[in-house]
Amino acid sequence: MSSVKQIGVVGGGQMGSGIAQVAAMNGIDVCLFDVDPRALSKASASVSASIARFVSKAQLSQSEGADALQRLRFTSNLEDFHQADFIIEAIVESEDVKKRLLLQLDKIANSSAIFGSNTSSISITRLAAATSRPHQVIGMHFFNPPPLMKLIEIVRGAQTSDETFAATKALSERLGKKVITSQDFSGFIVNRILMPMINEAFYALYTGVATKEDIDTGMKLGTNHPMGPLQLADFIGLDVCLSIMKVLHAGLGDNKYVPCPLLVQYVDAGRLGKKQGIGVYDYRKDSRSANS
Ligand code: NAI
Image (cartoon, helix red, strand yellow):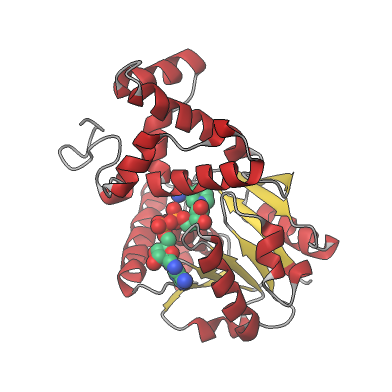
């Protein structure tokens, strides 16, 4: 495939909006779609604010910032993706919903277009099998927040072609990211290791080993992590963490992946993390610190 000229991003939440921003900041025209118009307005506002921060820190010039915004288009019509040569989905972490979307995209998109999924844990092989182009489907897993995090984990499904892999790697490097490659096993590399740690931090809190602050401080200062596992879970989204634990449990079959009941309860209660204003910590009382 020749160099990507137009990217379509589906899902304008935390990840999709950031992915669209990264593409626009690296000179590629992007169209961002979401089923929810409120998500589109929120995405537009957060991308503008983030680009303004890059400009104020002199990481982008005024004109580069303005050019990036010019390259971004927001749409409520998926048909607008018919010309995109690379489509990245970053919608809710549900296999059924993602498969339904891929089926729709399969009909709309150019036959040469590649579909990248930002899934954190779902089988790329199974997502690919829902389309008529399984060799053009690949995992392209960004990290949160995409404009700042330097990594993309590329996941090869069983049928992903070498051409699709090469095009995805070239695009990732054009976006300024370091690439790692994973085979298609639940959780891939990073979440296979990270999520059981986060789940264990929930068990430590659930069983009264320590306070949330001490669990986070312990892991920050004791293992040199930039943030503690419970705070990180809030940043990722507790619903996303729970979905990933369920995928690890179903896919790897070991009881060590059973989601902690406290994590389940927080999600049931709508405590989804920072994006909701409350998760393990309460961000509504004081936006400068995560106290509860
Ligand atoms: P989010 O909840 O912030 O955003 C999801 C967006 O998808 C929402 O705006 C929703 O309206 C939209 N959506 C849902 N169904 C849709 C459909 N059928 N068509 C179009 N839009 C639809 O979720 P987030 O955190 O951005 O996660 C998205 C994906 O990225 C998930 O697969 C997640 O596992 C993955 N991911 C998340 C990371 C994180 O730290 N939150 C990190 C890396 C990957």
